[in-house]
Image 1: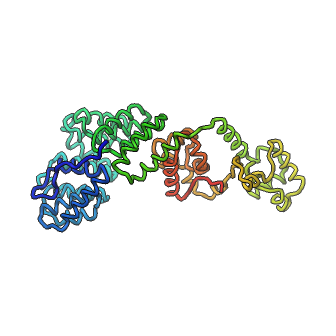
Image 2: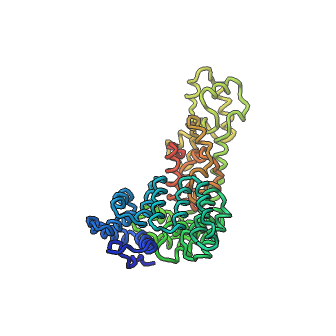
Image 3: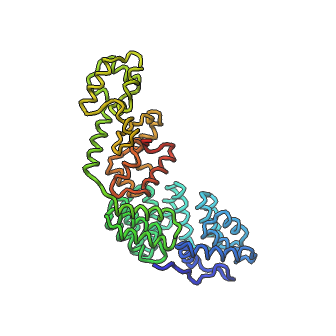
Length: 440
C-alpha cells in the first residue's frame, strides 16, 4: 500500500475549508509519519501569520498534529466562528476539560453550527467523562435521526458499548454501516467488538475491509495481525505489520510486533516437556501439611516459614539443624519424605549454582507481603490485548496473584505468546507496583 498523499485542501488560505474537508485532511495527515512531517513544516511556515483566517487554520492544524496546548492558544486568539468553537471543544475534550468543551459546543451552535453535530459531540463528551445519563439524554434529543444518520447510530453504539450493552452496540454499528458503508469508526468498533467476543472470522473480515482502504488504519492492521498470528498465518500477519511500518517506520508497537511474529515462526512447543514441567510444579507446591510429621518437626518448619516441598529444596541440612529444637530425628523425617520423590534438601540451590536448565522452581514467598486486594483482582482488569487474554485462559490464570506467580519463561512458553504481549503484561503489573516471579 502506498503512503497516502494529502488531498488538495489548503488550511492556511484566505478561505477556510469545510469541516468535512478538514476531517479528510486530518485522516490523511495522520496516516503516515512522512505526511505528519510535511504538514508540520506547513504549520511552521504559517505560524507567524496574523490574518484571522490563517490564525484559525493554524490552530486547527495544531489540533490535527496533537499539539493541544499550542492549538488552544492559537484558537483562543482566532476570530469567533463555528469552526473555532467546534475544534476548541474537540481539543478540550482530548485534554479532559469536559465542562469547557461543552461550553464551546454551545457557542458553536449559537454561531450557526449544525444542531445534530452539536448534540452528538456533547453525547461523546459526556460518554468519555463517564456521565452516561447525560449522554443518553443528549442522544434522545436527536432520536428523530434514527435510521437516517450513520453518525447518530455510531454514537449510540459507543454509549451502549461503554455501558456493557454489547449486542445492542453491534446492532447500531451495523445500522450505521448500512446508512454509510464508509463510516470507518463504526466499522472499526464493530470489528473490535467481534474480536473481543471471540467471533474471529467476522473480526478478520471487518478489519480487512478497513485495511483495504486508504488512509492506513494502524490499530485495525495491528489487531488483524494478532488474529492472523493466532491462527498461525504468520506471513499474513507480517504483511499487516509491514504496511504499518511502511507508513510509520518508527512505530514502537509495530516494531516489537514484527519481532514477535518472526519469533513465532520458529517457536517450537514441546507439549511433553510442558506436561513434565506442570507435574514438577505440582510436586514443588505440595504443602508440608500433607505429610505425616511429628509435632516438633511441623512446628519448627512452620516457624521457619517452610510450607511446601519447594521451600525444602531451597533449604540445606545445616539450615534446619541450626534451628532451635530441630534435631537429627526431625531431619531424618524430612529426608525420608524427599527421598520418596527422588529429591533432597538443598537441591534447588545446587541446580542454581550449576546452571541446570531444569532448575527447580523457587517458590516466592514475598506474595504474603503484597496487598491481597491487588492480588485478588481479576486479570481482565489489566485491560490486556486479545492475545494476552487468550494466553491467560490457556494457562488458567484468573487473578493478578496467579499471574505474579508465573515467570517470563512460563508465559513465553505459551503458544503464540511473544515479547510484545510479555512487555504489555510487565507494564500493567509495574503500574500496580508488582512484577512477574523471578528465578534470579
